[in-house]
Image (cartoon, rainbow, N blue to C red; front, side):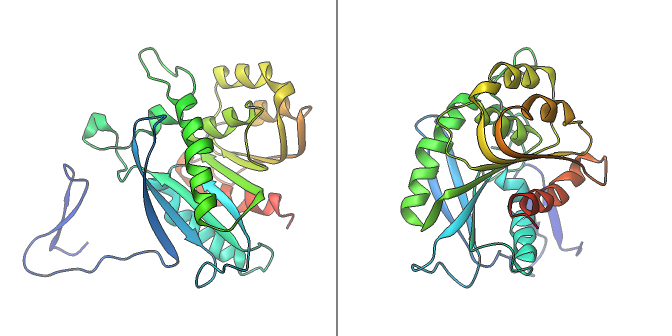
Length: 260
């Protein structure tokens, strides 16, 4: 790292040490929208990326709703861009709500994934906010983005990793969920299995991809295989490192959904 850049944990970012100025790097083909949720009471920064040089009003776009936008947006845009080179993915948009912060309020940040993504108590004293976040996702974010962009409402994808996988799999148990395909990576516990087992008869989906890194998701596969999912695929990812799971898992999940 250049010696004139210093990390400031309190402000969660880098500051310049001295007169030299550095230009920031942005992601091409992207935009941001600010949104307040009446359901969660939070303000979100919604990150949007699209394939091609701009949104073409004469085309429709498949859409990936990506949880964990503060951590995963850059990784996801690069992964999808490379898969587009195969010419086996259609026109594509990624929509990703974020907090503008990677760290939680306990450490001075704004990231509330440990509340928003959890529909049940993980540990004693934890605050589950997943029910409210589901309402934000499906009744505020999705309708608003689909008014702004020309999206294919018949091909909505949802991606969740770690805590985001809890949210994605909980979504399966809601009969009114609007998604056709889900990618869920590297999270499993007894409470989640109990919820999926109890609600298995409500599950309806085109494609579900489950990827295991550190956490074994095969028990989820075993519960949901007899359910109303047209295609369900389980894969052990090449590394058991939890933080290596998102890149490989997203690529393999998209390849499963689009059959290549």
